[in-house]
Length: 369
Image (cartoon, helix red, strand yellow):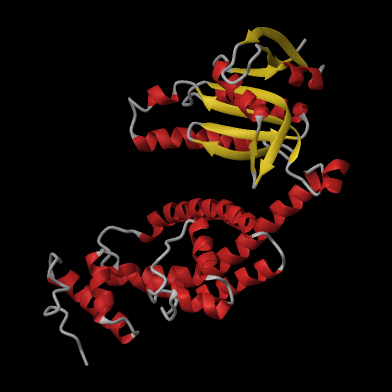
């Protein structure tokens, strides 16, 4: 039976008959496809009606509550909810019927992980890393597709069909691509991570000697007071791209923190070369504030992909004390790298969190004779 959408009040906010006709047809399609009136009313109220076909394709029919899903998957309800929370996903009421078959399959995968013997807290830590990465990737894809999908004058029906078609074509490709990228990163990690005999015998692989560097943009905070937010984001993105250009394995770009990037490498010489290149490329970029880099070398702990410890803190503190357009390194870095670069004493530095002054050296490329 046809629904009178006008009488339901779902066309009242539209400016003209053309827009009302497009929404009416979309509402008919969705209703015929299984959406009830209240679900459609909520979508209209939340201004996401054009996304409903995509949401249904991604999530499937809502058939299970979290409580039912936990029971069928054979996992504790508390663990299931904690797992979703660690991934950065919404955690609905346990008795809200909002989950589909894909969610149930994911819960069953979670049970297999638990059955394999991994500790729950370690799995949740790994989930947090995954969730943050996937959230950023999803946001990047949204920005990438916005120009293609969101055209002026497109009505809701056209947008809904476009979102649906693109998802059907791209989702399988994205899944294959994500698997490929993960395998490549995992293979690269296995090739370049030096696991010592002590680490193997102790069963730990998170503590090692590592070179750590931070690079940031001088005056970035002040720049934010004079330029638009979008332009500020572009400046930070250019720093990330420069860092990506100079990081060849075993040097890795660990993360970006606003106007800064963090690089790591097992060998300080590799990291010093990347730091010097980064400053050189920053100087060649006319539209980028000056860069400065701090480098330290010593024991550090890797915890779920991030690095911690006094060596990390030292690299950060040295960065804050480096001159614009320079690389400032700790004495341990100079001693480990040796010849091949020009080193000059920057004097002892009193740094927050360090009881004794730290001997620091500026490093640059040897002048060409």
